[in-house]
Amino acid sequence: MSRKRLNPDEIEQVRQLLLSGQTSEEVSTTMGVSAATINNFKAHFRKQGDQFPNNRGRRPGTPNKTAKKGPKTSKAESSARIVQGAKNEDYIYLIDGIKITFGSKPKTIMIGKKRLVIEF
Image 1: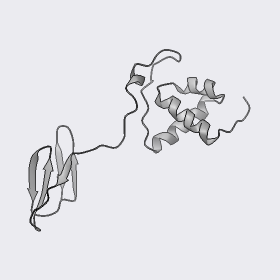
Image 2: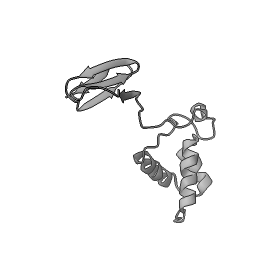
Image 3: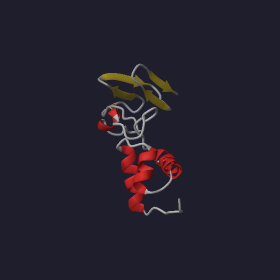
Image 4: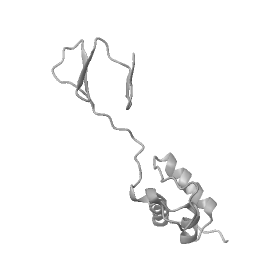
């Protein structure tokens, strides 16, 4: 296979095809480049925060069940906010309807499905 460079529009098309659930082999035949090139682009996109559907064990050409769900975002969103009108020495957070007050400012607050971790 001869060496071929992809322009930015083609690179974005590769990204969209991977996000839609196609395997690297399917995208490589569509774009006319090697599967290794597509895997390199896929690794680059992952570093930028994209998450692709799990195609492990799926044969090229078979439908992907997870492609309909769409890509997952890599950034977690929390519903924590600082309550307005608090005293200067108090740090009050409202987390999922639960009011939590601290005497000193926490360094980090990590909110998970089953636990809450607070570091000072």
